[in-house]
Image 1 (cartoon, rainbow, N blue to C red):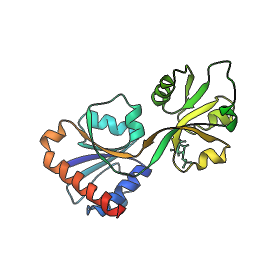
Image 2 (cartoon, helix red, strand yellow):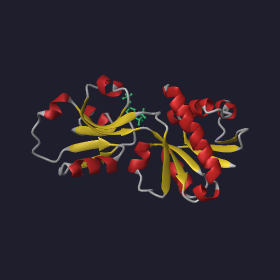
Image 3 (cartoon, rainbow, N blue to C red):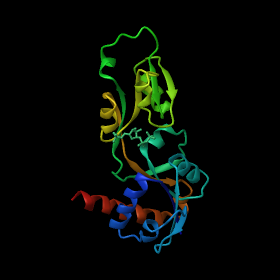
Length: 211
Ligand code: PRP
């Protein structure tokens, strides 16, 4: 039996659509109420978890496969996995964003940057050899500049609507993000056939959607 941890919410919804196109039984997933662990007719056991917890379950060998955003992978220090597939869903970008005045303003102090992704933000500014103060927020990162706490944000931009609604704009794009299928390194040895069958099925589904 293959065990999969799926990031709850938007990623889960898109992954189910893809699984369905790939010919898998998704009814138990779509019809679940508040259950967190379910089995499908394809002999797959699925758990639904927060993004960082998907990595924790994979790391501890509880699941063979994780479905998680590249943003979570980049920010995490966990490296002991194989990334086998870009699902090409959940496409968005890491960006530096601020009010338009940020571009021309002269800073006589360290810039303050709000982010849910301190590692990404730190690496981005280190690459520019800029020493900034990073302030971690858990969500609604746009509030940083809106309430006057920070000069800019490093955050995920999908449609750009949240930035626009708050008068903010992209200053610089950092990198592209999408949902990835990752695999436990031990599972690949013992469940090689099952894992690659699913990867191939999903790969075909991704290609058929694009056609
Ligand atoms: C993400 C991100 C932005 C928003 C961007 O937040 O942090 O706030 O989505 O999307 P958009 O470009 O389509 O407007 P999310 O909705 O995941 O919630 P959060 O702010 O609580 O992290």
